[in-house]
Image (cartoon, rainbow, N blue to C red; front, side, top):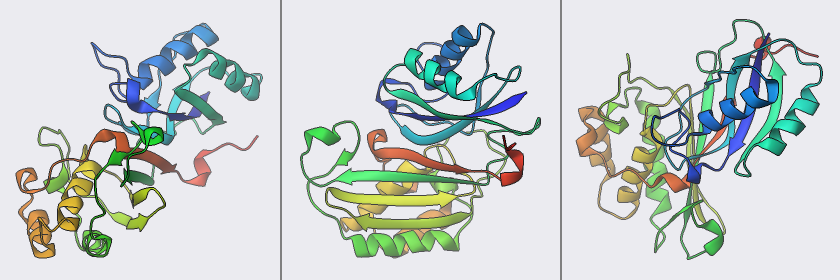
Length: 249
């Protein structure tokens, strides 16, 4: 039977989601813990990859095994075995061909910025020394809706068939601690959100104009965009699927 496992994690200690040969990943920890608990080899396929140091408030992965007697007991026991920076929120039975990556119709990210020194945001937000111009940064965010090819914000050595992404939300908001950038789309390219944030911070600090921002997207060259914002501020917050793939119990 196929299941979706819903996971949340603090990614500071990991090389990212995907298994790597010489570093510990979230996927590796999940697979090893589940294989030990269920006493069989369990392989999980994630909805996407998060890079080293990036966090997830919600990520889904699928796996196959015989039908569970008690899903709630499995969640409770697995969370006892997992390290404190990874937690299982739910395990959901799905149709047999459901795919955590290919059936996702929307993904959302948040990027957190602190504008004051805060020991409680260490490793959980990007700290900057002064507030940028949020109005002009939101004007830049609205320009994202005019484009679908985001090669300019993609990691250069990435094997993808298309650089097209359809932006559904892009918004900067001022918070008590600083700023939060929320962005949602059908898919994202590797490093895309951090590259967008870094470029928009250049705009907010007057180093890049809105016209130059449009030129960056039209030229489709990563070298013309700003530096990627640090991984510590990035959170995968939501993955959306068609309701028909979940089996009601």
